[in-house]
Image (cartoon, rainbow, N blue to C red; front, side, top):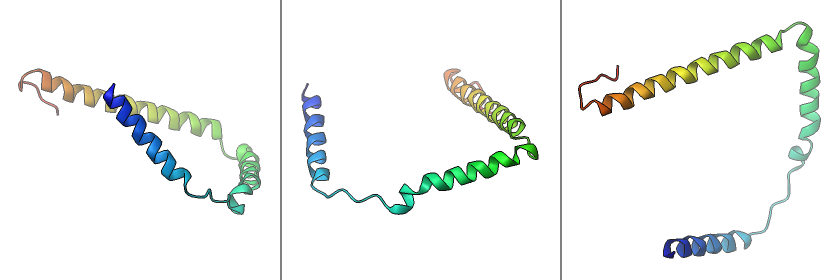
Amino acid sequence: MAVKWVIDSLVSFFSWVINGFPAPDVPTWLTGLDTAISGVSTFIGSLQSWFPGTLAVAIITSWLLALSISIGIKVTRIVASFLTGGGGSAA
């Protein structure tokens, strides 16, 4: 209960400090970003007849999945080697 009060007090203090600064205006290059993104997506969309984008996405997704699984197996082996009392190997 005391920890919650301390955290609430700190959050209130920091929000009071941050609200004391004026909010900056949004830059014009950021508000005009949607036209640039639509232009790039139109360009990429026209490349679909020459570049197999769905195949590239499938290959990259499967590669990332295999990488994630291999890292998970490696971490599991390392953690399991700690549980053996020093008799296991993390290699």
